[in-house]
Image (cartoon, rainbow, N blue to C red):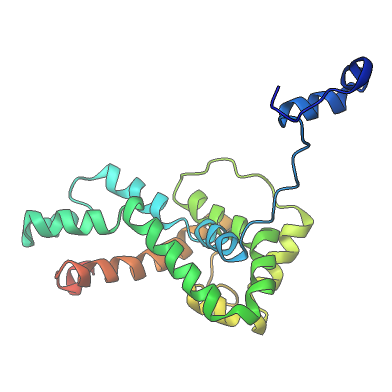
Length: 214
C-alpha cells in the first residue's frame, strides 16, 4: 500500500465491494475521467478511415513485384521502381495523410466540429469500407445503421461539406453521371479515382514520367 493510502477502520474497503476494487486498481484513488482526445487527432483518425489508401495500395503491391508499373517497369530503373513502391506504401502514406489531415483541420477550425461530427457519425466508415469492399479486402462489412446512412447522406451533397470533399478528392461523390448502382462497384470506382491522384504524386516524387501511368 502506498504511503498515505489508508484502509480506514474495520476493513471498510472490503465491505464496499466494487468500490474497493476500483480503489485498489487505481492505487487508492479512483481514476479520473479520461480527457477527450484532441479534435485535430480525432479528425486525422477519421480522415484516414475515410481514405484507406495505404491498405489498398499495399494489397496491389503484394500481388505484383513490378506494381504499379507492371509491364512498363522495364522502362525505369530499379531505384525508381523502389522509390515508387516505397512512396505508395502504407508506411509512407499514413503519416503523410495524418499530417495533411492535421493541416486541414487547423486551417479550417471554424468547420472542424461539423466535419468531424459527420465523419465520425458514419460517413468515414461507410465510404472507406466501400473502397475496401470494392477491392475485395472487406468481404463482409457491417450493415450501415440509420445514423450512419444519415451522416453519409449529409456528407455527399451538402454545400457545407464541399471543402472537405474537395480536400479528400471526393468532390464527385454524389451525383456522378453513370455511377454504378452496386455499392461494391461504386467503391471500386471511387478507389480507382482516389488512387490515381496518389500515384500521380508518387510519379512526380520519383522523377518518373506521369505518362507511364496511363
